[in-house]
Length: 241
View (cartoon, rainbow, N blue to C red):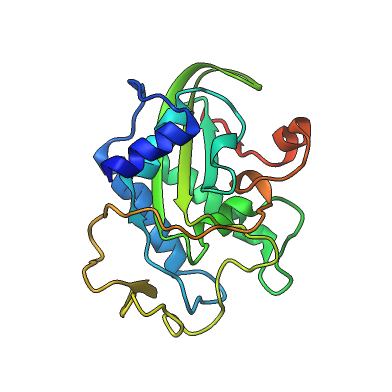
């Protein structure tokens, strides 16, 4: 894991630094457990949904970018990792952030595979069947580039393999675990799960090497929309009063 982390930072030019507002171990567990809970209850049911594990390497990449306090996607992970962003001017509530992403399901039509009315790319990344590794970090920013916010907390979650592949649905519809990959030989809470996993812990994963196709849709992907359009339509902004 150490060499993988070093490779990411060497490739992307990120610098390890003290990060204010870092996630606690309990928050990390909550983020992972919420991802897996939501992945287990998708509608229609998923035949190939993998159980997610926590990846410290992805969390370090997220921490390096969150510390830059920029309200746009990290260009250095484009075509390498999936990414969801969340910002709040209040105290970070990780439950609310993941809930907000999943709530976009109401805008997603599985049959037509499109977002209706509003964005849904955060949702599709959260429930992307093959995205079985996640790592997140937060940072308290005095100011935020591209947004006129002060004292705001940014949450960055990175995913591997990345989701939101153009032309593909996030998962295969079918009876839970009816189309699991060979490496996932158990079905636990509707999720394809390796035999060495259980349901009450969070795990350190590795970075799969699958190369994605071009990705799109909201702040969970990368499009050719202008920066202004992205700010208006693609990034989730939440105020906690």
